[in-house]
Image (cartoon, rainbow, N blue to C red; front, side, top):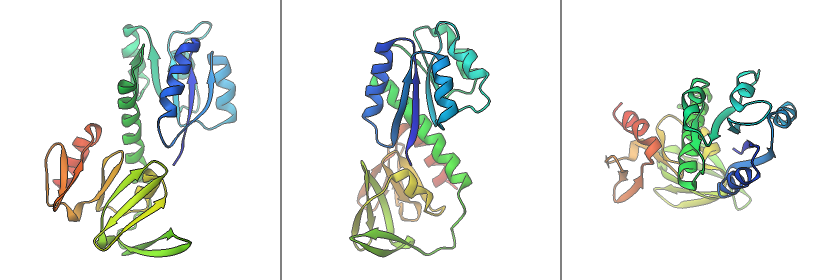
Length: 232
C-alpha cells in the first residue's frame, strides 16, 4: 500500500528536509508541500491524504487550530521548533511530535509508529481467512499455489518481497504491508521489513525470533506487540 503524504510548513528549508526524508522510504508518496494551512486545505479537499506533516507555529492560522477544525482528519505528525506545544499536539491524537531540526533517525521512529498503527488497523479490518489453506501468487507470468503451512517468513526488498518457504523461495513485486493483509492470524509482523509464521517460531528474545537456525529481528516499535502475540 502506498501512503499519500502532505507537508505543511511556512519554512522552505523545513519542507525540503522532510521531503528528502520521505524520499528515502518505500510506500510513501509525497503529494504536495504547502507553506500555509490555507494552501493545505485546498489540497485536502482534492486528495485523500494518509499522513500529514504539520508545522504548529505558522502565520495567519496555526497548525493545531487548522487541524482541530478539519472535518476529515488524516493521521498527523506535528513539527515545531518549540517544545511547549507537545502536550497540545498529543491532545489532538497525533502520531508523534517532532522537534526541529528533525534528524532522519527521529523521523524514522515517527514513521514506524505510523506504520505500526496502520498495520494494526488494517489487520483488525481485514476479512478473516483463517480457514484458507493456500493462496496464489503471480510469479514468472504464472499463478503459483502457496500453502500457508509451508510459509516460514517474508522479507521486504524495496518494491519486492521475498517469500521463504520450507521448499523454495519466491521473489515477487509486492509491498510487504499489502501482502500482510492477505495472510491469516498465524502471521505476525516483527519488523517493518519482516513477517513470520508464528507456528514456525522455535524461540525468541526481546531482539529477535528464531525459526530453527534463522534469526529474524524484532523492531523496537513492534516489540510489545510481538511478545504479547507469541504469549497467547
